[in-house]
Length: 122
Image (cartoon, rainbow, N blue to C red; front, top):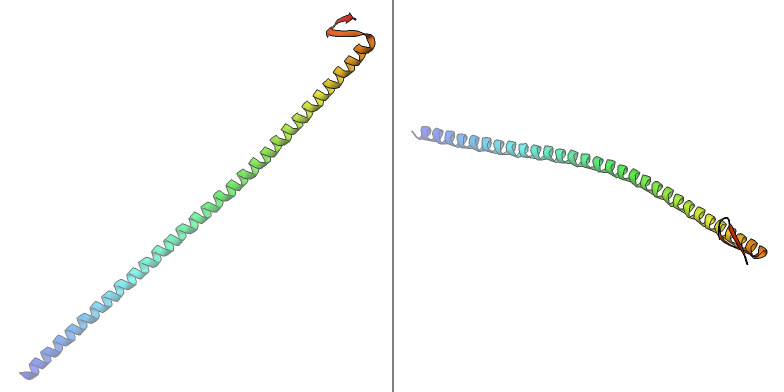
């Protein structure tokens, strides 16, 4: 009977060892599965971040083009405004010269000009 008990005890130990081994294998498989899932998530997140970077670079390039357009337009408007100021200054100077010239003629002839077409002698 003692042999049967020892055999039964050995079977019990073998069974428990097999269960522990299966539990360890299952635990290791679950850990590997989790590592694989984390790796896929990390790869997915990495791809998402790369897409965001590409989108941001594209937006940056568009913004730079808009800024360049804006700068060109501002410079063109500044140039146009300077030309208008120069033209105005030239016109004012020409008008002043014309008035001085007319005053000089008036002083020479002794005539004051009140309105166009009307002359009054002094």
